[in-house]
Length: 448
Image (cartoon, rainbow, N blue to C red; front, side, top):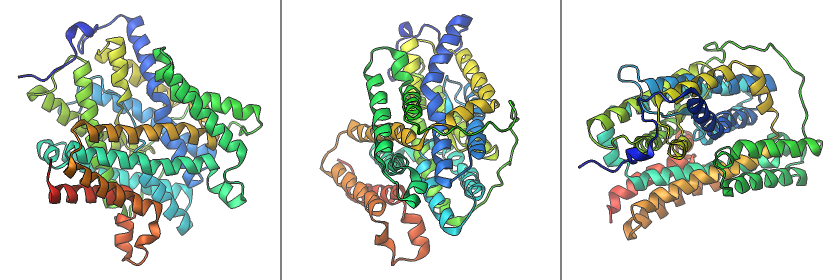
């Protein structure tokens, strides 16, 4: 028996249909509103953590847009076994920020340059993407080990640990800490205002307002910062076109970051399974059977290979975006042709430095206020996934042990100070500690 899908009557333009140009462009713009800020935000946050210059930040943000366009094209159009063939949009993953924050902190302690820190992030992203490539070939086994409960715990921990990064941005970052101005009232007010705008827009009935809430909130917060005199505008540097070139940031590798990055790819694989399944459902396509399994394998394989491509071109790992499923359901347009326009728009915007320059103006406090809501939403999605299967006595024990272990090392990292350096490096991440505990606890107590 086939699992439920969105009724064909609800899909106005199916996967292989050719909608009129005005319909395709209208749907593509709605998708862009939903994802644009999410694509550039990881670049802004991570470059800020590394102390990168405005020029380097623009470079990474532009590469993120360009590669998101290329990755979307590969994912949608399916080349051989690579790609889901669905209207599944790819963009820079924010989940990796938690691990990248640790890399940035370690790099600053070693006295590394921003380019060296970013090179390590991209080098580890390139190598460890092979984990997701491998997982794409063993999905049935993986789905037995990584149950919805474990997946929900991992996603919740990602959101909770990322909130720490948002709070640092709200306070003004490392520069504010060094200057003794961390947590200035003006920064707190800007962050609160931005978060309030994002939440208020999500309450509106207008679909465009909800889908673009994050981007509109950042625009409103930046405008408020300008009115308060808190928006320094750097002079324009460079040309109006920037050709994407591979290895502009040399890659680096450190063995101690292999496990944390591998677990992040495991987590993003779990998320992508859910996203691709949801895309199939809202597109009126099957969510079980051979066709579905082939699309799932191809989609996860594309995620891994696209992440490798992204790191080579100076960006961060990519993943499927879940918010686009809401756009498909809202518009009833599931046609691949829409994805072609989205990919084209993203690629073109990525080679126009002025776009990244505008987003690089966003003050840290504004960015922190917007991401506080975004990362909190990630944690909430994980909680919803955990609860979806029911939380009995044994499941609650697994959740309690996992969240306890993950938050313990996040809130008080000195607890591992007396252990060997290698152990500290691996399990000093709340995500790693919590995930390992979740798998072990589930094997120990069993299921309800």
